[in-house]
Amino acid sequence: SNSFCTLLATILMITARDPKVLDLVTWGVASGAKLFRQVRVTDDARLVASAHIPQYDFALAVPAKLAFTILDIARAPNVPPGLRVSASNYSAPVQWFPGVNWGMFAYTVFCTKTALTANEPGRSAQMALIGEYCSSDDAWLTDAAMRATQSDHFQSLTQSVVDELKAPRTTFDESFALMYCGLRRSAVPVWSGAARTGPQFFAASAYGTKAPRAGDVLGSVPFIDLARHSSRPSCAVGMPDPQMLEYLVSELGAQANTDYFVLQTTRAIMPGEEITVDRNASLGLKPEDFAVWMGRPWCDDAARSAAASNSKPGPEAPAGVVMPAEVDPDDLFF
Image (cartoon, rainbow, N blue to C red; front, side, top):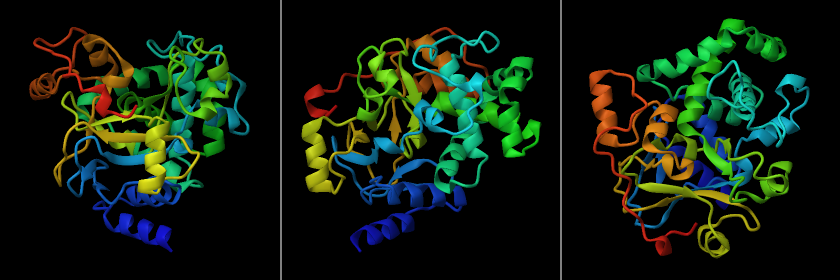
């Protein structure tokens, strides 16, 4: 069938030897993700163009239903009472984990659990790859999370999860710290409480009906979460408007009546070029706050300088930072 041929062609384009990448791509494409035979996943889980992609074209499209969000926790069985999160307490700060709210904490716990679970290979692979997102430069982020795992609060809240996994406590705690770091680097807002925008299934949930109490809700979108940050990105993350959804369905074989997250090119991309996004375009943080959240400066040049000096990015905005040039909104579809 055409769908089988598309799946086979996409898998053959994978250059990775990591079985997690193969599991992710097999599951993602079989579930409706569109890589349009022009994007491949590399051995270190990055997105690279396998063909010339014109400016303002779609690099890939992922059904919104594949996003892993706080709603997946609500639907999960046997959620410990302390990890149940609602629209009313999602944004409440975690007193023993500075800078983290209850929604992000519970979400990180369940992402960690999913990464360590083998009964959903595709989803588990997605979460495991996020946990491998960090590098030696991110030690201060993982160290902060490891300090939180040593608290009595963390130990008691997560003990039932550890028991269910039958995993050593040290394995879970270390995996949590890496997942926390990876999510800060890769998660995207799947629902904006202030703007009341996002997938229909989120709009119909308590997070949609009670917005803006929940604020922005972060989630992980397969493939899109593999796109690295750049202050000079080749793509933008968004959700197409109805006109472009119709184009996706009629011209590119997307599913009708389905919300999508997409990567749309902001300039032409050459074969072999890495596909990048500006992670701050959706977060909307000040440069100094972005540096704290991501663990490195927003500006590519400043990030390279920080890496070269092997120094922890500070809270101050790097000198000479300029925000990205404006793209004509008429040329973008979201």
